[in-house]
Image (tube, rainbow, N blue to C red):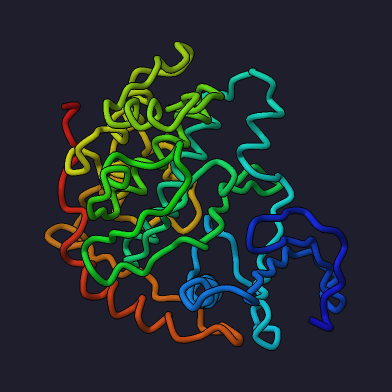
Amino acid sequence: MEQYEVVEQIGRGAYGTAYLVHHKAEKKRYVMKKIRLTKQNDKFQRTAYQEMSLMASLSNPYIVEYKDGWVDEGTSVSIVTSYCEGGDMAQRIKKARGVLFSEERVCRWFTQLLLALDYLHCNRVLHRDLKCSNILLTKDNNIRLADFGLAKLLMEDLASSVVGTPNYMCPEILADIPYGYKSDIWSLGCCMFEILAHRSAFKATDMATLVNKINRSSISPMPPIYSSSLKQIVKSMLRKNPEHRPTAGELLRHPYFQPYLAESVNCSPIYLPVKPNKSNLGDKQSRKPSGGRKKVGKASGSSEALQAAAEQTSETRDRGEFGSNN
């Protein structure tokens, strides 16, 4: 903590506080999240340690970058990550004051979010709390996915605990039945609807009405300025049956995203069209998700688990085509 100087408090939640801090030696700004552990049960404390360990093991250009982490004498966990000058997507939508974003800008964001989500799912990590306030923006308007406080390393096929933000919850979570990666697809679909329409996909004055709308997958029309292709893709993510929702990998292989993938950072060639030539005819492309950061400071232990799980599943996932509209 000695190398950081607190500049100001920038956020506060039920269990912790976020600060803008200045690294004295680097002369660079970061965000420090302090999660209080005192008077919390064992499960909560495990979740706090999990977030620090998980953040340390992830390495993707569209996920907020882990800098440092430590435990303060058992009273709190401190996690230091990169600072995103552009704020979060919820703030950006509010500042727009009803002026819709261009389709080109939306699709760049959409592509980057899909790349971040596909990376997590390749490493068997379920985010579980995707919402616009957890989508951060850099000063260059690029995406950084954040807040892994509810994330779960999915070593089994399905999770079962009820977590998340109600407006972004999928039908299977509300029905209290096991859920998997497609729950994140639903939540991202809700985020994309909100980015397009500047309003929630599912909004109600009471919980019963909200649950009813979600269970019926009843959404209002999206703004007419956007193409039918884009709107259909978002709708496909909000299908009630999770088996009928596409995976992040399937969406990334959709022709609509190809122009945006070509300009993305470190995009896997598996998503880009392959031009046949003498050197690649007959060759098979293989996909090996990265396992995590080499240097994790005091937060270590989950990198090996991520790598082992990724190797086990890299050959079996995302082989299907983009789903039908039903």
